[in-house]
Length: 256
Ligand code: FPP
Image (tube, rainbow, N blue to C red; front, side, top):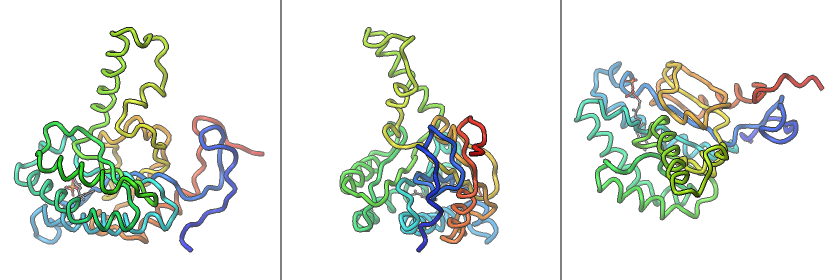
């Protein structure tokens, strides 16, 4: 029975401090280390990305068994365009292949897919496949899979600010009345709960422009395991570490 943790959560998420926790409902992952994994084997970087894709399949399948309702994966950042052209093209071919081939399986698994990021500037064929996948999986109830693609956290916030500024310009909104909820409503992830846990593989301790707004109070777990080697067991280790955290949301420890 993998979905574990005591049910002693105190009060409502975000309002109160909680001590012993259940598993997170939203896990975000920076899937790092594909290139190093391939290099260690004397193979091209794309070989690592292909192996990374197998890990995506594994973790998507396993996640709902642990009570995870939302899984958000960082697949391609707005900064990743700086990589060699052949790697970028190869990554898009892989992504497209995954989305195209996997859609039927994702529907079977009850997975709802959403892509976060700018679609302008993406290959039109990729945009088509993404829209098809979102539409086909839209009834999925078991897991909400977010794939951040051509995504950057700062760009996402700028885009939201532009949308709010446009509303102010047309008189629909007063600048002084703008709330966090207003800004949130223009994020790619609007309406979804913030990640409870961020996992980053391969040992790097950075956010790399991922979900900057949404990760404000997330717990962070870094493992030295490279993404292609990341297993269900590694996921359970991350979840177990999370359950031992004390989330304070800016408050002080609850002694009562
Ligand atoms: C980081 O490793 C990984 C990426 C930039 C791409 C991640 C993409 C996948 C795993 C494939 C598809 C994903 C989905 C959700 C369909 P890196 O290349 O930076 O590795 P390095 O730090 O060792 O060089």
